[in-house]
Length: 182
Image (tube, rainbow, N blue to C red; front, top):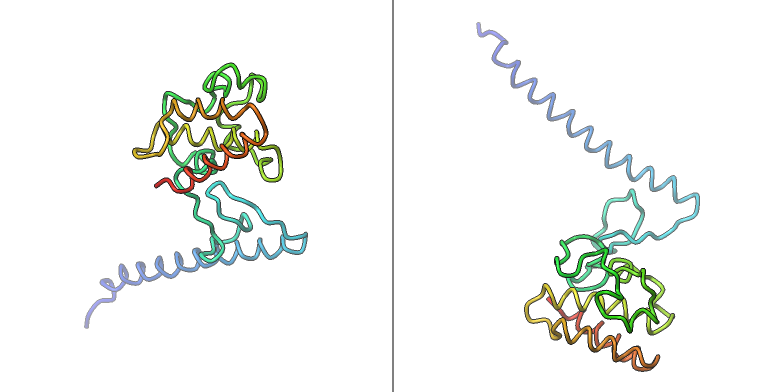
């Protein structure tokens, strides 16, 4: 008769496979259980760094995720791609765009903070201008075929600082260029 010894490695492999499947399923259902427990505390929609929305512990849903373009301020603030050396994250807006921007944005606002701002919706046109203008500048440095050169972005931003209306128009142009960029 044959010895059961050759079956032991096969049985051990099945045991590992079954255990790993159990642990994976337990991890998945554990995350769902945590999300369900948080639901009772009041459901809050969270915006993740990749632009998707939902609970922090839930599995990403394909129907509820939003793709963030490669040229938007949200993309640049997420850290998904390295910033160009000529415009580092900690560079002051006043140093990058020039001294005229100090009056509007102060000396300490950085490019990263400008792209991360969330008070541009329903707020001042100048806030939207610096947010979209910073992303446009980064795109001008890194994206071949972007509709603006870096010097144009800087000049157009400074020219738009003359009035709220000019800032709103130029911010909209920068936003359209950032969203249509590939």
